Image (cartoon, rainbow, N blue to C red; front, top):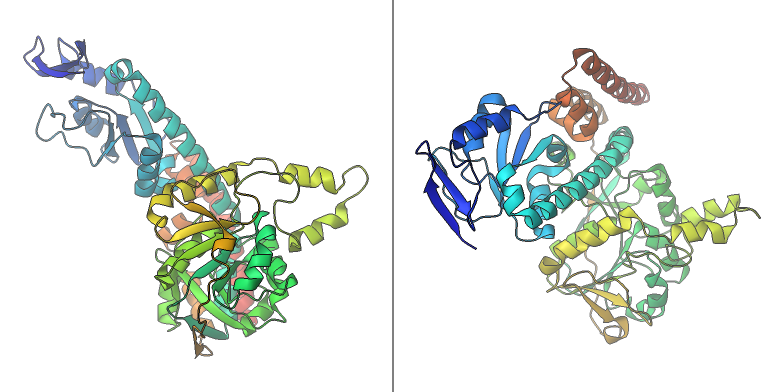
Length: 490
């Protein structure tokens, strides 16, 4: 395969790949102008990504037509010349494999940025690089589907998350700080694989620092295994059902402000978690509340693993991280949500029917698997997944699957890894004033109501735009009313 630079009939630079022209052999500038003018875009894109623009002629025309858009390129050819020195894209992404491109695009743009992006292939490239072009569009399609799912979740929970944050700061009584851990960490997720591991975890509990994800707490306690730390990040109403079993326990809970937490649990020891890019980080600092940094992920298991990596330099093992469909319950029993669901079972819709549907492959399971697989090389030196009796069907990239029996005989000296720090000086009035101000902050609104903001930004019809703005204002007014009720209760 060979790229050759040649002169077009009008003396401008053009090129061929394996003898096929990637630009016009007569007038590449006119070709580029016609291409850009022919684009039909029914929204105002924040970003435009051109798939293999070759000599970048189209960049000048795109900038003229879309002066407020940032323009990027996905390349199949490395080290290619530009027709002019100033034909430089904001950034160029290189296609080497599907997962690498998907990760790079998502990390750079995020879900909001991607959904406000217009993608287009340079016509000459689609013919010559048909296979790469097809794979790139498959990545884009999958990426946008994932982004829509993420934004739909954020949009649905936004109001609840903000209310949970306010409740968190108003009710926080005791906070404790998590120190460095000098023994191996075992994280317990609630996948079916946890059940087989429980007999070995009983043997290990005095030699490992055990972190229980919220839905794994009940099955561990039921089997007389007391985790050293529990973690919850889910802001949904039903999520707090998993935490009620901690009300009569003396176990610290690591929790993010938007998580749904029973109010009485705030009288217990709380390890506050804060995401680096979260607005709540500033509130923690204003109120002088010690917190532990956490990374936001689609799955609580991912947050737990990255938390463990930050608090120890020892090995980290994860049990119950099945992330695969199967027959029967999708979580190890007893499970708090199952206790609620089984009440509705009857002869026509019985437990077998319900658990069968739970066991089907889902988009969420696939997304979580992909997340761990893509992070696997980074994790592989220190993170392993454990099983007992039955290995997992799906591999998680470079993350090693090992038999839990090979580590259950380890003997390590466990200590107290928490530092007590009382937190009784939260200025509740100031917290409410801060959130009232945040509801006027454009970046805060974009972060919590991204779908509404994208709809407003993309809309070219003024009447429709007013409707979108009214819908967003209605949601904000509900939170303002909630804040007012809290102020009245002080």
